[in-house]
Image (cartoon, rainbow, N blue to C red; front, side):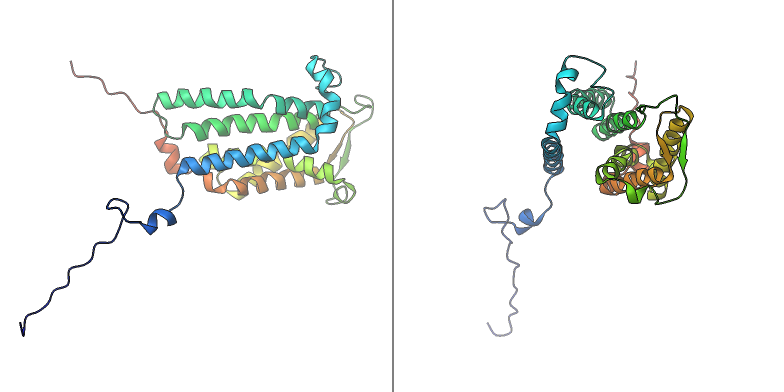
Length: 254
C-alpha cells in the first residue's frame, strides 16, 4: 500500500549454533592449554637439539657418571651438564607434586609458582657449581682480579660467553614469574649482578685458581636480563600475588 512504511528485520548472522560458520571462531586466539603445549614442545625440542649438539663431549663423561664416580663426573663441566639433563624427569615430578599440593588448597597459579621455584633452583645451581670448580692451582695460586671492563671479554671464547650468559638465565626467567617484587628489568639486572658478584668474590676468597673478572659480572647480568625478557608475558603481578593465597575453608554452622 502507498504510504506504508516498510520495516527491515535484521538478518540473523550464521553461527556455529545454527549450522553456519562463525569467522570469529577462526580468528580467536587459541586456548591457554594449547599455547602451553606448544611452548612445552618447543622447550623439549630446544633441549633435545642442545643435547644432540654436545652429545660427544657428554658421552665422554657418561661411563663415570653412570657408575656413580665423583671424579670425572661431578668435577667436570661435561659431567654436570649430563647429570642435569638426566635429572630433568625428576625435576618435572617435583613440579607436579608441588602443583598438586597447591591446587588442593585452592592456589590459583599453582603450576606457574611450582615451575618457577623448581626452575630457579634446577637451572641455576648446576651452573654456579661449574663456576666454583677449582683449577689445578687451587689453594696455591693467590686470587686474581680483573677490574677493567671488556678486557677479558675480547679474549673470551664463544663457548665461555655462552656459558656465562646461562649462569643466571634460569633465575632471570623464573624469578619474576614467582615474585611480583622482582617483575622489572632493573631489579632483574640488579639480582643477576649481585649474585654474580657473590660468586666472583667466593672464587677470590676460596683461592680456586680462577680470575674474578668484572666482565663475568656483566655477562652474567646480561644473560639474566635477556632471559627475563623472554618470559615477560608471564611475569607475576601484585594482584595475582594477593589472589594466590590459600582460600579459607568456611566452618559449617552447628
